[in-house]
Length: 273
Ligand SMILES: [Zn+2]
Image 1 (cartoon, helix red, strand yellow):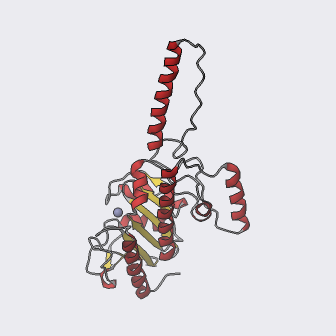
Image 2 (cartoon, helix red, strand yellow):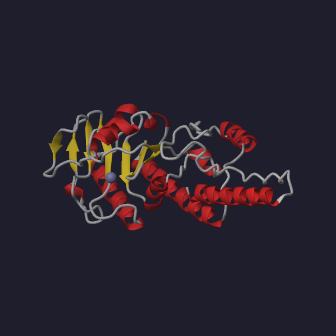
């Protein structure tokens, strides 16, 4: 069911203000759209501050991005929204923002695709990262084309977030959840090593999710959907205890010390990632 245009205009302005207030877009960043009909999209125009935008600033286009009404130019990222609508016929809203911590994780090469929090497993499955693409070019829609078929929320490497929903509120909720996960993960990593839920815990969660009749989300236990980190992602290797030196001579001790030093340095580097 499509929302009527008057309500849709109000919803987009409200959501943009909220995203701006949370600090997940600055200045003219971000873009939001809603489907008004099978071939009509209401969207934010390009080059406008989303915190000060009004309902009359929005523009209507067709599903190819051609302007149908409005005095401004449609957003330069509209093709990314259109790709989402093409890949997911059941969704009616797309939200693209620049949430600080989600972007920071992609810059640091740390995946959020690991299953860390039960509620995320229930609601989103995993949070994959789409590989880097040049903003405003057709590389962007290409980079999310496949991922958006399976996930409601995707991180765009070095760029931002892309979330979709049957309603604009669903798409916004997913953005809020993603940034919240990033915030929790960031804090946890400052305190120590972060370990994903184990297989047994995941299996139990999946059983509960089925019993509750929740929509079954795609889970990425092997980090396959992440393009930003080397394999393993957040799964830092467990430090191996050093083998005691076979010989007790001084050179043997020096070797062991050297190995210990190198191991420490390597682990330090890995933990930075
Ligand atoms: Zn952007």
